[in-house]
Image (cartoon, rainbow, N blue to C red; front, side, top):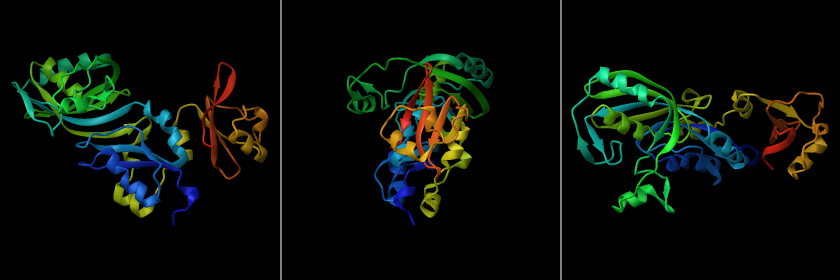
Length: 295
């Protein structure tokens, strides 16, 4: 039975192929009987993999997660390019297939800090409108290049024009753009034919639930495990009387802690005696402040 107190949480969802990220939230909304649900990074309809979903008060964690780096496994189809740079688009260009040795040589150009031009079919705003809406109307528009970081770009296999890769990248990286640009660098064309997100920050796809499994279990990812996985993050219990003060936004004092001499990490989750998280505390220029207050 789902009660009010356990509708706040973190869900590691394994988004299936063929569903939009928004639609994938439906199983969570229906199972929990709530509307306040949000994901922390869109996956395209043709893609699958880890989608971190936040519910209730925990939607305030969004800013903490959206900036995390990601790891993807993808297949690039060489020799053709589609207008959407994925398998759902129409073919707009064709070219000969490159050799594996050329691909290996050119991949190195895309490792590190690079400027990347997002796909014209994307959710980026151009003059107040989504780029994909302009593209569907046939309105030409320039996509400005943006800085992103590719931490690792590994070639896993190449056979009959299909390149399998693993990419570790920063927030804001488009794997579709990476396929397009690698294809052009190899004097060819390419689009993403398959895409799976396997990791967000320190969190792995293998710890996620399919929509059907979530319907059966209503399983949240343990918030303590979530916080412990973050670098330089601790958990401290506060005194009972401090709970209301924190809820009212009263500036933090060390005296709020049940054990005032307990050392504070770079970021500290403040909890009550029942283990309910009240706020995330950080130290900024020598002063404590609430990065997130869950009240």
